[in-house]
Image (cartoon, rainbow, N blue to C red; front, side, top):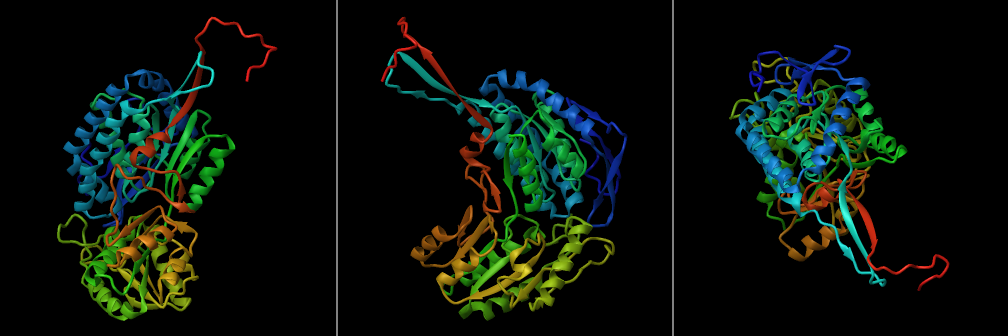
Length: 499
């Protein structure tokens, strides 16, 4: 790996295509910034349509060999890649912290659990099976084959760069596809490093390719005629544009989009558990997660007490250098995200919300130019206000009271999103009753922000199309072929119809 772990050393990366590092065809580059210091961290190749075409060609050339390889062998190579990532987890985590500002402990932990996805889908690679169809015509053998799609374009965000990338790449590769990855321009480095490790582990060159760049680079990948499927994680508007472009040429797509997840606290909840769940749901990772519990729906009986506790806890969160083990919240990932946090809070206040805590930049000593924003709690938030209906993707919690179960469900379902929700209650009947009524792809009961490689994840409504994780995910990188074979010697008269 490059000495990218050193946050002070400015590094340079090219694309990773067909087993080699390549400069952009135009020789253009773009900078990536360290959000903790606000200074340039590295320079990356700025990909254009020609670079995308080169990467797709490499993936297409490798597809035949990868598809023809025995599924068991493919699975074993994914497991070897998992071992290589685990051995380099510390370095990968440090790279990601230096690019997105999330806590080093969290980024290293993510790098250490990424292999679980590769182990799981490596194990599933040789479990992909067709079926024999029982027909009335017993002389005919009809069976199905499950075959890969081809080249998959993978476009991923900056908040958990390698983790989210592997969630898409692992099932795609296990199914026999090859990939071209376009990481976020905010955090491209760890994905390039992982692609290098894939080939060191024995995965053939061209199976995993990375092209870095901006929105135009991603659009070129989506529009490429040899890309059979696009897997995208990111914002709703970008997802809508990608889905429209892919559908125009009948390409497959999976979209994991944003959320405005409700964390619902009933009066019979364990308040200490709920308090911890609300804090983790919005202030962990500085709110930069698609499942952030950004709306706290709190029963009026416990609203005031919970607000008081949450504001005290928010005031005690230690903001600082994410490389420091004692830091509890680092900066947001980019200057643009910092400005968005500020503008959305200011708009909420103009709309009548009450600021309970935070709402401003919060640069710690020694980091005057970093992208730090304080944990923020807003009360008296109108359910139909802009802040309650739109994703912030920052450490901003909107507290909305409710009177009864029916109102809580209506409020929770009252946005265009449906990614996740939390339910806090000790009434087991209510817990499952509410879970069934919530329009969300994931519902946590008396817990929050949990995920596993073998449990499906995805959204309802504007939060996405398709599922990641679990057996369902590998199915979305396969297509079904029906094969018919007449086994008898009979000659059927084409003008005589059989029932």
